[in-house]
Picture 1 (spheres, rainbow, N blue to C red):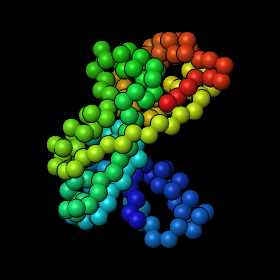
Picture 2: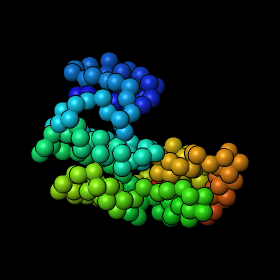
Picture 3: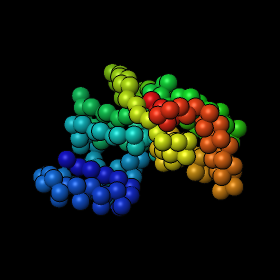
Picture 4: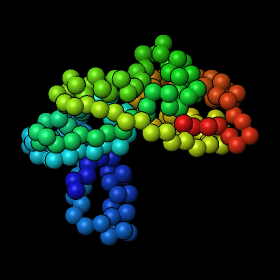
Length: 182
C-alpha cells in the first residue's frame, strides 16, 4: 500500500498507527494529491477518503488520479452526499455563496470524474449520522472538513463574521440530544 498526504503531521499519525497495529507493506510519502510523483498506469486501485473536498483544484486531482490508475483499475473516493449535513450545510452554503465560496457536491464530483477521463462512474449513498453537542462543534466540523475549501481564503474578519452568524442560526436546530449530523 502506498499512502500519501500533503501534511507531514498526518503521515506521522499514520506511522504511529502502523507501528501500533503492526501493519506491514505500507509506504508513505509527503505528496500533493493534485501532482502525483508516480508514472502513468502505476496503480490498480486508488482510494481517497474525503480528501478531494480539501483540494483547491479537485479537477486537477481527478485527472492525476486517472493518469496513475491502470486501465480497468478503480478510483474510489468519498464526498458528502446530496442532502447530507442538513439543514446546516445548505445554510452555510447560502451564507458563503456571496463570497464566491464553492461547495463540492456529488453531482460536481460526477462531472469532474467524467471530465478527468474516468469511465463507468457510479455513486453509492450511505446514511451515517450522530448527534453533535452544539452549534460550535458543527462549525469546527464544517471548518475542518474541507466542504468549503475556499472559505479559508477569505480575510480573517470575513471568516469570523460568517462563523458567528452561522453558529447563531444553527443553534435553532438543537434538540434534546444535541444537533443531528447526517
